[in-house]
Image (cartoon, rainbow over all chains, first blue to last red; front, side, top):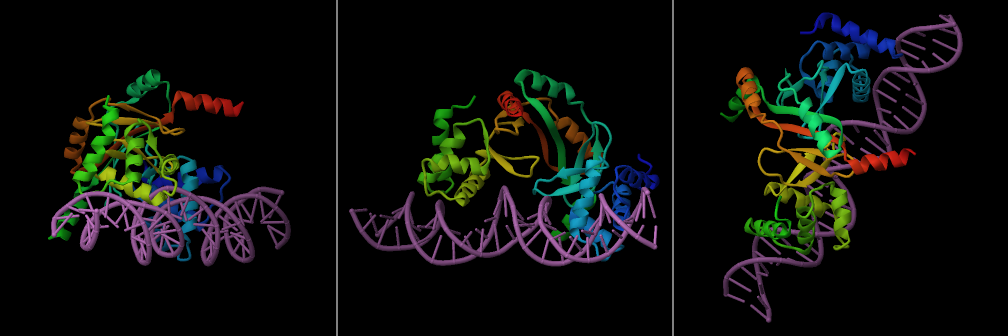
Length: 151
Length: 151
DNA sequence: TCATAAAATGAAAACGATTTTCATTTGCAA
DNA sequence: TTGCAAATGAAAATCGTTTTCATTTTATGA
């Protein structure tokens, strides 16, 4: 796994190296994202960050996420409901399984699909811009919570 | 391939069997979707259908798509921009490669990923609700158009 | 054929996630 | 410390999609 303690500092350096300034808000948002394997929705992040930055605006969360994504520090996940979650970037050819309840993420490297993609591109003449291989489901904790709610 | 000529009629029967009524608008929308391998965006479909149904409202397009999806006659594709396209349903475990330019679709059955998914579910305790394996790119025609535009 | 109830329609308004605008504040290099 | 570019929050704008509501249309069965 990644060296979580030092990761936030790395990200802050990365931001600074790219000409961005370090603000209290950014430190807090970076800390939250870098220290978690979860994928956060913007509002979740907003709520979590406001505990330490009371005046924080949701817009700033979006703007910070945009920069972190641009620097490949976080990655944006599309969800079936059309909204997004933001996740500490995975390295290499990894895919994700996201819990629709809490945003917890399991990363897997699974089959290497590159050969298939190349074959497809060759056969069809398409230029492939991006691909999605994502699983959506419920983590054990959220399954339990759901059973609880039903009872 | 599917028997395109009879397909629209099949869909209309299916709608009727499910208690939905057949209207001029529905016939036109069904005809468009059933006779094409392309994935239409709602507005595209709206524009195409208005040539034969001048007073058509966009809302009706959405409502018709909703019903066709419910009956598994069309499938909804999520796109990177967050919008959707609607495609004549593919049968079985097929995946799609969508042209971001024109919505043309190539269907492929690729590797069977079921074993991988089962293994993941077993190992993590997740219950998998759905999965996405989609490729996005440009079809040869749209690549050519893009080169044209650049020149 | 006709009356009727249920379903479908279009217009307009509502929605909700995300983005933009703009005036003010803040970080940081000189 | 100063000055300027970058960052911020509030409010408004966007845009795809959905809901509401009054009106029209379809299919059924008398």
